[in-house]
Length: 143
Image (tube, rainbow, N blue to C red; front, top):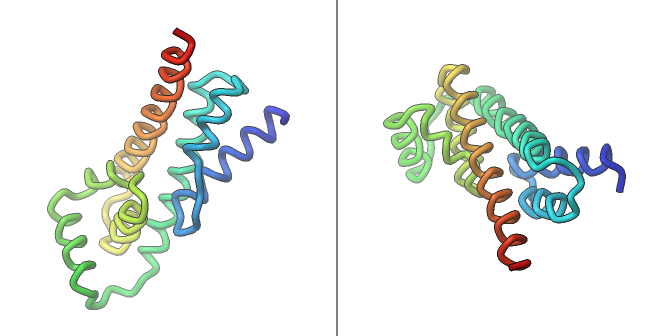
């Protein structure tokens, strides 16, 4: 697989994983790390950018939603997000919950700057952990 195709696959998988569509960006990242397709920092960066843009897509969708009464679990999530503010988006990488947090951040019309910062930081930390775990696993296996 060419580098361009590898990067495009990682970006697409990362973007889709951040939306309500299913994805497996961690697996793609680990596979590319194991195949030594590129420098780990570049793969982490590509995955982070793709996943962050997918998360921001959810924020934008949340801004398009009308503000009306919601269900009990949505109210709980909303209260939690209002309590912690944009910093709650550090957890935007979590399956299902992260999608909801991004939608609610948009629905609440939280400030763009902090939303982008915490969302991107959370996504980057997740991919950094996956990369370190993958690369440490290789080192452990070879010893």
